[in-house]
Length: 129
Image (cartoon, rainbow, N blue to C red; front, side):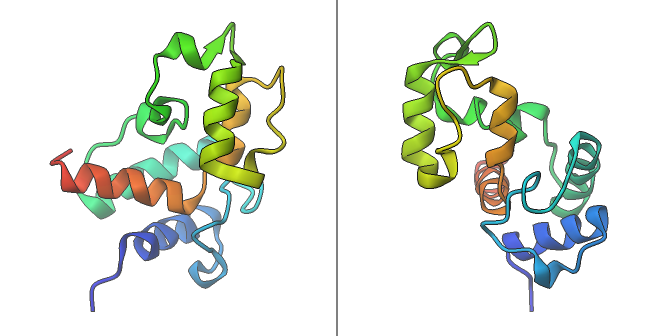
């Protein structure tokens, strides 16, 4: 039986973070829930490239890049714009409640979940990278 995208990502995360994949959920946030740091994310990208046989860029893992608006509409001097905050709240609901006026682009990483990564991977797989 072939594992689904989320299960394969959980396997990679389990290896990087020394956590049992069964303890990782699709809604688990990499940083806040699983304790990942920036070096863990780099290692995770490498393992997922191997697992899925594709190339990932830093932009692929960036939620700001996935909002579908120009960079200048996302932030001004790294501070998220009201438009970006609105889009994030629509996309993430209560999970984005901690993003308030004055939040920075770096704080977006706290919203990155296993499910969000799965969406990126599936999109790349379906569109030939």
